[in-house]
Figure 1: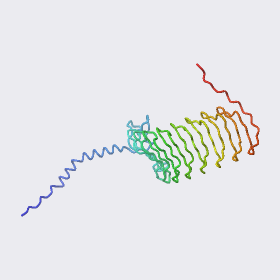
Figure 2: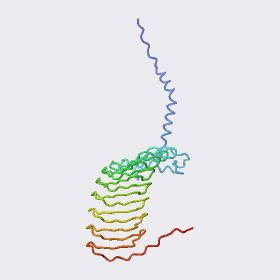
Figure 3: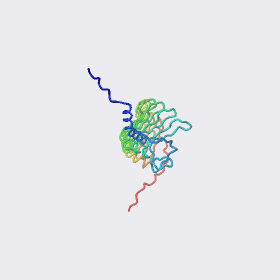
Figure 4: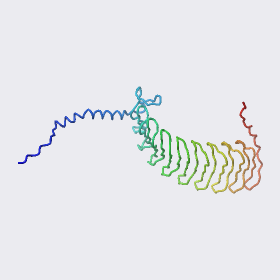
Length: 285
């Protein structure tokens, strides 16, 4: 007759032997994981020396998690991951309610990737991107209700390009151009009603050229000239009814001429104006 198929060669002794063979490898892997995870210490049990984080009294650069608690509570306030004394990985902050208020990532001590802030109600307050520790790309801000209120182009950690702001109701509030962190170009501002409020030119962060302002009704309020951040040249202002209010001239920020009218158009006495100080000149060699 047919011979029965041989039983599979398997026994508890063989299984035990096989497990014993891999036990040292598993132990090494576990130790490696624990080593990577590091310690978990409250901030008060650590110290910073030379820009590096150490456990208090230790000469070994700290690797692990540093945390703080809300005062008088066991509720987590902040936690940051470190590797060899530098922030590395996710850092977060929390409200007393336990909800997250901030999350950001570090790579060998420098911010890298997305940084997000939240309102306590859970809505996003701000988002920003970082590359090698510097803000890069669009920085966005919202109201608690979720309305976008600021959009700023960032490069190399500074405002570079267009920045726009909005009122909480959604109407645009301003639009400006930046270069290396300073206003550069025309800045426009609006009232919440949508009526233009101001148009001013900048160069290297200083007002330069014409500035015009309007009342919310749309009538002209002011015209003036600026140079290197100081009023310089003719200027005029108007009442809301369109009647001229002032007409004068500035020199290097000092008012040197002035005529005045009332709201009915009657000329008023002009006040005495002090003489501007003499312009400084560089000594010649």
